[in-house]
Length: 284
Image 1 (tube, rainbow, N blue to C red):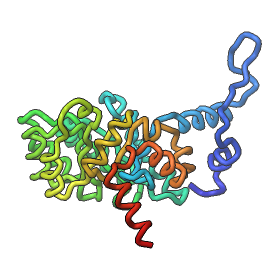
Image 2: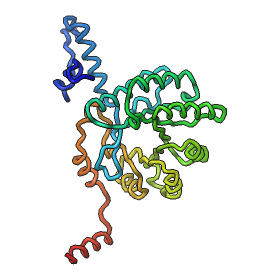
Image 3: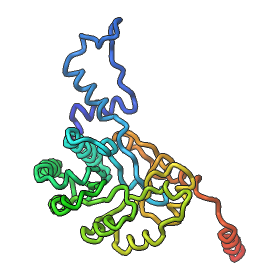
Image 4: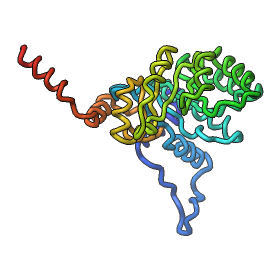
């Protein structure tokens, strides 16, 4: 998008200002508002939807990506439209000077359809985004009879430079096999499920041997943050880190401010850590 474009001007002028539609006494939209202006307002409102969940590194010191939430659980009729919106969001960040990877999630059954793969490939190619910015999140692994077709679809997208994530990873035999065979770039582990049971340390070690990045999702309690630290995950996201925001707000996330907030939630130092720090102070 050119900096002189009309939408850019609207974004810059109306930053963080919600649109209030002009209505007459009956509550209907004002008829004096031109159709072009209405379309611009609708487009602006649509692009300010709270759709993007920020993802940070394990320490909370750096924004490392974003999960485009509308695609989670979308039906087949909505998928291509929402996928296009997700790509447009990533392009918006890229044109604004921010290299922010976006994760676009789709059900695995879509990958088994050559027509859907053709459509997704066209959208990705037309976006002209650099390699590494478009990440595909797969959830609900396919039935065995669709597995080969699904893997072929994923390989086609990978040739375009798309990185593959396995969303809602639970460590099943099928998921481990997929991780090995497809050499997936990342897995997403719902950390909230380990609040009252043992952490999957062995599973994490096995995953790390496959050189897959580990994302801790659904961090909503301090306990979740502590468990993510114990598992040495690479990335974290959830309501405790930062709730979903608009695509424009993503551009204004201050890494230092986020880090300060995250560190304030970290568990208290252990006695050994305090003693080590005291010993270092004495040595000085």
